[in-house]
Image (cartoon, rainbow, N blue to C red; front, top):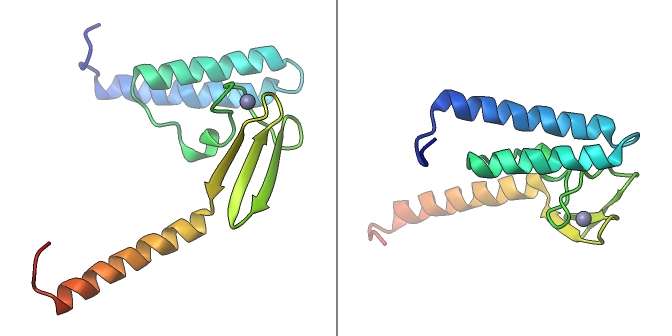
Length: 126
Ligand SMILES: [Zn+2]
């Protein structure tokens, strides 16, 4: 397979496989952690190969450092701190901080409002 020649249907299948692998990782975490972590690694490999973005739901369910599946209360700790979500991986100790989505949206809206306001009062194009 040549690089840069990825059909849409192939990407679609790759996306599905990533989803399935994460689902399996979640199912197997309690009774077969090693296999669960392997599933995450496989999913990451596929995502990388096809240049896929792992959706935000799964994105916060695995560790970016040790690539293991994270289950809050099992091997991860979730805390709210300074209007951010802190996810601590108990496998390797890595802490990820994710801003609240609600806040993000609001900030985006404000930015749009600001830009339209600027356009209305100032004709200059920057
Ligand atoms: Zn980790």
